[in-house]
Image 1 (tube, rainbow, N blue to C red):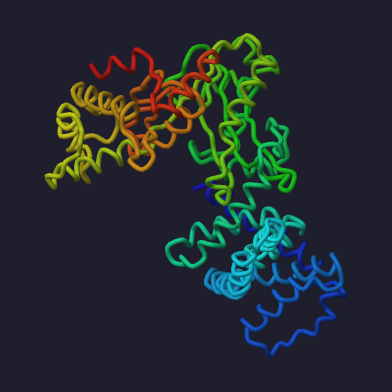
Image 2: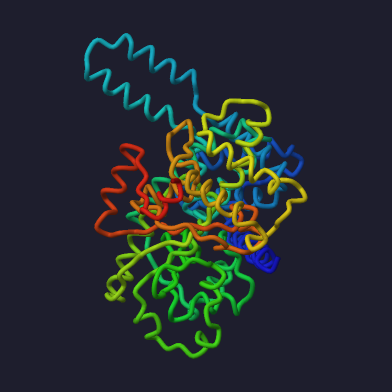
Length: 471
């Protein structure tokens, strides 16, 4: 709840800052001279504004002012108004298909390679929709990159109710993927001395283990902790993705104990705290920008952070995660539903039997609601199912690991190292995986081999301890 309130506060402030910055550009002499007709319908006004932006009369300054006017008016719309505007943009300022057909006809009649090459270049230009130029104009405005990232987040949110905007979402994703190439990103460490605005965003964006208070955040940024984030020059005050790390001795198995630690000890740590640790535990990785979904740089983050930690703390011997298993319970429910309907699951008989034994935990009034309340038999079944799920459950369309967190770490070359009963005793841990968490180990000597085996052959690296749970 606290994090939600903080999120709304700074998001509202971001929008206000955008409006202010763009209003100043909008109110320039260039835009005031346009002679706005207040009697125009809203859609006629939009058409004229878009056409003015595309015409680029008066040079770059005028173009930016017109884009600011358009963007400022867009920000004032509610969701329905924004969708109406974007539908007009896509439908009336898309590719000129008649022009494309004419070029293709000329290409078919061309009788030499040189002429065909010129027509192919012309065709490539013709296939770029004019609305892409509007997006690029926004990119040149103050905080324009953030505006476009948030616009794609809205488009993803509207997928079901506005399927006609899918072409705009895909086009915007392509632009953002080129702008957010890993070569443009900067890795920064976040500390308690970072700006209050940045720390506020850290609280709001934490997606794995909610930050409960400023004291909670201070513990996570103590000297025996590390937090690193990627930033982009176009969004210097906005983390794109960040990872929280605990410096400990040995592999950790309970996230509450890891996050809370020894509060009194945290209060008296100096800058050398963590220097005697032998293990770095990555316990939270959060994508901070919903509009960059599907544009992956998390794998680069892990590698860069490992490099930073090795440089600063050469005594570290192990790099591991303490990760949730977010899709386990959903997968179990799906299998139980199929079994109840007498559908073929393709699962081994022993797995189906273990699922049946856990069926009563799925109902609205389960006999247990916390890992400590289950029987030894139930615990053994859940651990058995969790191990099988991590090593064998696959997505039929890709053959990759069914669990998204597992897929992320396996792609990066980690191995499934250890299951932890009651690793997360909070309600969300129970609802995701009955409190079970997993360690993925990054063995630096095996990362490349594990990555190649998983990506190329679909083989999942696992420790002997995890494999023994399946016997």
